[in-house]
Length: 263
Length: 372
Image (cartoon, rainbow over all chains, first blue to last red; front, top):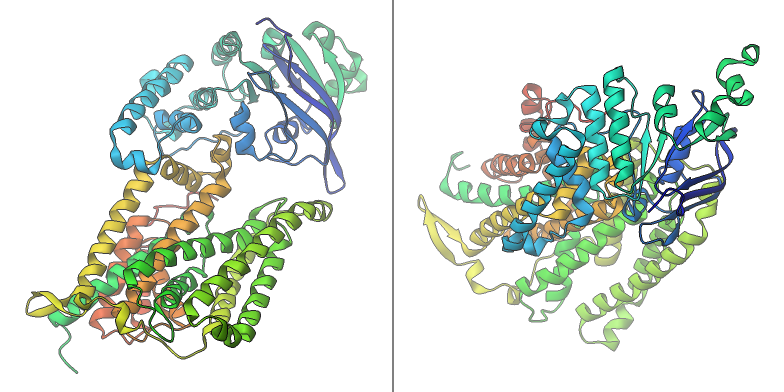
């Protein structure tokens, strides 16, 4: 499948108000399949709120979110709970990492495989099928760790990993959910240039698996380096969208980031 | 007064400990997942005994064996436990509850149902010779409209919560709600079944329950004590397997660590919580029935309050949120209660306070708070 085959995620007039504050104001967003799309903007622009609306952590004040799964079936995400949305095929990572810190890295990934396992109470008592499946889960989880380069750390507690590796573990866990769309919330935050370089390669490899990536990021080198398409938010509104080169030269974007004097 | 340590008291202590452990696990499982002390859990224990009593015959024995009555009692308690969660706690922890004002509605219906039952109770006895069937009949008939109303109105009323800008409640309102739910269930039970304590009719109790099976240190062990021990051990082993070996058990543990992230792993948190209530309540039903078998004439609307509080103390003593801790705490409190002669309700709390002075998080409590 090539880039732009179909739209994986689309929002229409998406709006979220917190009391009198309008955090997301009539945002229209189209994420094409197979693309790496970046959502950028100054702090407080409403980027993470958009993510929370997509994954069902917030309910939209109004507007629509439509998601197309890997079988090309369209789903409206309005009113769905986060677990349902996850099972439809949207996985995410967090700005402030949310791992299960007190369990080994491998178990974190295994939990991502959870929706696809079948271990019921009865088979657990009978044991045989469960044991076979447990082995499969184990192997699959290990593969995801390998994919992000953490295979050697499979038994370490998640909270003992360095920051950059915790981020990659979170990505591995999200991938274990077999998503059609992966949302990355500031994946490069707190990473050094080398780690960021590795992360860019990783994101490209994820895209090559056929998983569409939508990411929020402040690191412009990363954004400009890997994005196929960029959407710029400011004060909850889309102020620019287009190819990296177009966005980079947009006066609105420069004004939003640097103020009027910069023009 | 006889000496402090007698073999008879040991037997008694073991049984009480097993029963308290069964109840305490219900408190601790719910706490582990939603950080809420479900005070209504004691009432579910009480209802377990009452449902069984209804089936074996409240006024005249129906001839049903108490162990047969145990199964429907467990099912009813599981339903009650789940409904307590859905109607009372779920709306509080949801940002935009689907099943919103209907919690008040279903509580109201429950109350109306109870009054209706009281009013028609005597008439019903004329229609059916058998009181138990009537009661179960009303129970089922009463539940249906509640569920239908709840579903229909909940969806329709969602906009109300939305327009009020509803946010999830803090833990304190959930706590006082739990205490309120406990009192509501107690009052309902008193309204429906009266205040005087009751016992299972002799006809429903198999003979071996009161015969001595074997003896320990010269103390005879009656069949019922043995049943309690075996039941408790089997249930605890099954529970441990459930939590550690099954998919739903994995989901439960994930939810207790971080609900929001668990949801993003595709786990339906509300279903996991409902399941936790179901398991805990079914165990409470078993404990309620076995307690009423052990202590004759103990079935009253108040039994859940006292035994529930003591079991709660056991859960705290063992380290609230920790299943093994609740088992251990239950056995310890059972010993305190058993050796003190059983009638002293303050002693378990004295012991609990003493232990908490040294180990503030309970014996097997988490070393530090898992979440801020």
